[in-house]
Image (tube, rainbow, N blue to C red; front, side, top):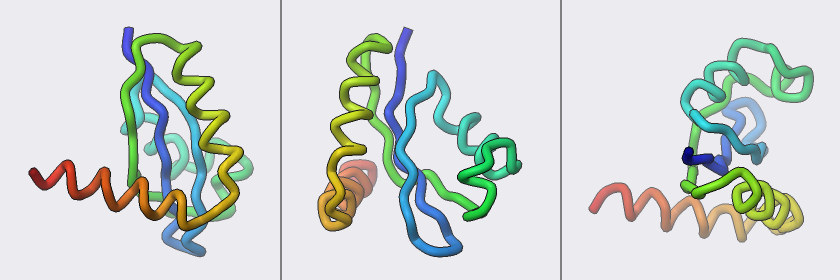
Length: 88
């Protein structure tokens, strides 16, 4: 079973939220429906990055690593590279 680590960006204030899910698109719908208190205040959200992991433990480790990166430029570089790779 694949698990994805994802980054969504708030269209309201350009902040990021990092999470993990088996289905990042369904999870995005949940964030945009107001189910989560934190993300409901910053709706709408768009999915800007995701990466696949083979199990939940590896995904959680990567999620925690990304959350520790407090530098916004780190996220921007990661997202730009991801979007370029999608275009290829």
